[in-house]
Length: 183
Image (cartoon, rainbow, N blue to C red; front, side):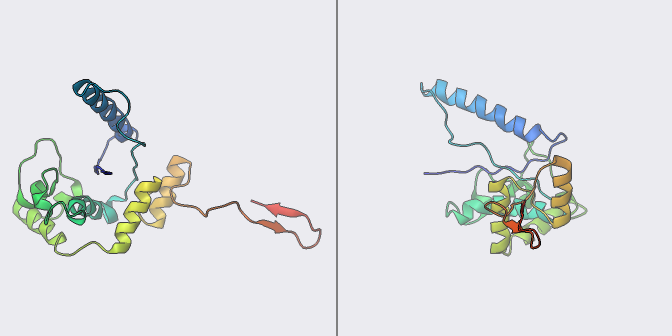
């Protein structure tokens, strides 16, 4: 059985999420190996992530994450999933470990109006295209956002922030001399 853990992290430093996941993975593996007297790794691959454009995609990512147990037929509603943040965001269940996102706080002027607005987000399913977009960005470690956001991330990181064309660039023949040019 393959299982996935989805975490939405806002961090003050760019390398903080990676460092957190590395430390968590190391400590958890050590704990499991000690507890069950085993050795070796627990996971096949590294964690996958994507930088997310807050204004357009953050709440969609929260909905995506909180609906995963429903899509997997583990529960009928996200409030029923023990590890979901839905209870805190939609029902006011206290959780000292988590800090609300600024976009969540902007959903209303008080806790009751924010919770009602958050519940309203779950009345409709995410568009299948958006679900696919979130999955592609996460699995490919790409930026999740509009073209301007992807360009900003590309510039900031100095590397491509989206998927490129597969395969080698085509060679182009210069008509007058017959020389080959390519990318």
